[in-house]
Length: 331
Image (cartoon, rainbow, N blue to C red; front, top):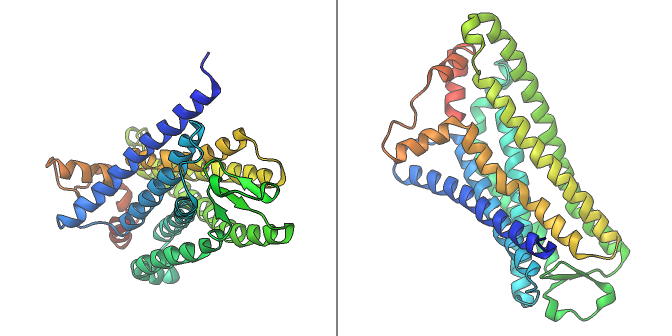
């Protein structure tokens, strides 16, 4: 029987290698398309940042945790611990923010074309870069406060007031400071999670409503085929379900860890759950986003990255010419 420590090592390093391959593929693909002068969608900027944030989470959380599972708990000094822990926290927050921006953007684009939504759809591209920059600044500033109490395992002195995190430790001064710390980090996350849940539910409602209308317009033969909006609904459900599920599980585990004496299985379970979404998200996007596959084919010279398939044109025809231009610009 394989020892539990060996299973943990295999799990963490497999998670890191698999996830980095998927995220680096997306980063390379978007970078190549940009520098070769290809026209990218506005949504691709968000996807590229999401892939970058996910890569940083895997590099600065799953990989160090795998080293800790190997018994290498003193491979970082105080400065190294601060850098690794800080970058992980920033990347984790960016992953949440980019998922939130992505979910909100998609909800706006597929909304009905009344006066309010038309104006908002026209202005959305101008806000993507500014929203991304503000997200980076916010998370970089928010996580500065964790640097003060972080130290490497070799720097730990006050054992009674220290919480171990495998390769790093953090000093917990008192219950009041711990509560303030929890509020500062939990409240923004809760707001973003609520927004993601609301926009995802709204998108699913719109897409299902449109799917029923499309079924009534087409022949029985075509109705048996997979509609693009049905695939989009499944992608949204899958991405959001994975993200929300593992985020909540990790949040519950983290709260439990702060109230109990830390045990190795708690640290490893929390690290695995926090790195699961960064591992699977690129493969969900690659398998469900047809435009990414067209980018890949364009890199290999197979066809134009903006060739539209029959199914893509079919969904556009049901929204009208004005909607078609909005859909093509973003998705």
